[in-house]
Image (cartoon, rainbow, N blue to C red; front, side, top):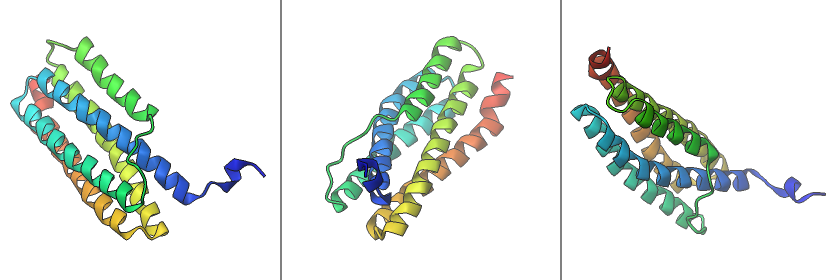
Length: 165
């Protein structure tokens, strides 16, 4: 019997927790660069707000690790690296163009959608595993991510996209 056969949902939950912890740390580093690059004051404010929220999300993840009796450690997340690389590409290729803001807004939404997907899965697994504290903490973060995504959608429709057209 292989070692792989011994892995269970708890292992997968912990691995995915490490993955999103790494992702949040990378997002935290990327947001100020994105905020600095955009032209729209509203979009800059949205990125700065999400930067502050991300700090709280990292804290909540650390609380979950602590509740599980595990060290808060990240595990390289190729998905978030790719999504953030696309954002960097937009900053380089569309710098000083009207399309920069819509491009970075779309990149930010790709990040949000990844986070919403991950946190939704983690919440379900935490509930299945009986990690009540983790469910509560993940739910707070999931609500913030959905709110941020909604705010970005409204901003794209109300201002950013039309200003670039």
